[in-house]
Image 1 (tube, rainbow over the protein chains, first blue to last red):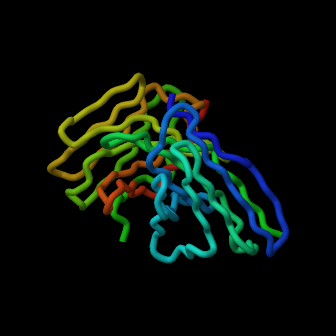
Image 2 (cartoon, rainbow over the protein chains, first blue to last red):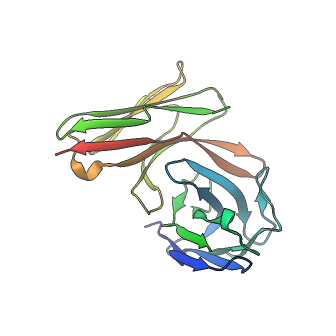
Image 3 (cartoon, chains in turn cyan, yellow):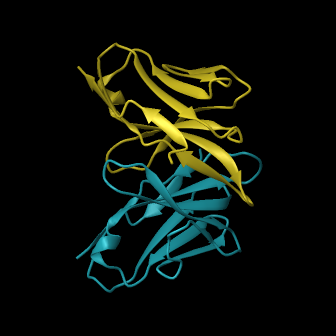
Length: 116
Length: 114
């Protein structure tokens, strides 16, 4: 149980384009989803927390106009990297917590984003 | 300031040995302590977790020891196997406004030699 699917797993695109990453909870309803960024051999850096039906809460230093987050349903959240540039290249990972109480986060397999 | 300090940064263990990874924290508001295992190119997977009212939790070959007074907790991997080679992260959960947030350690790269 508690499966989180992330798509795509890998994307390469040209500088200036926008890229959308999807995060789905397959077998549970996720009231809260999280988006992380991870650089090679480093820990996870929380970018933002999204609650279904409300605006995302961004961490300090994360540009909300650059990283658009939508959490339109209890099973889907999307992260759109707008006007991507090479410095946005990274490993992006989502996680989701089931509804109710102090629930653990379950992670997707990440998206490797490469901007040329 | 690293709120959750994890050590060692890397660890090499022989097959069959015990792998021990330690974490320490300062914030007494932390109330849930998970360990995650991450393989290259994959997302972290929840391995085992503990709450501060428990001093030890065991699941198979994995054990968490928790010392509330010292604000330390550790992961023990018994009978370590080459397939356990991965990066391990400790984390601590805390209320942050309307949500809960995970504060992460920097990770430990474990290599188990056959």
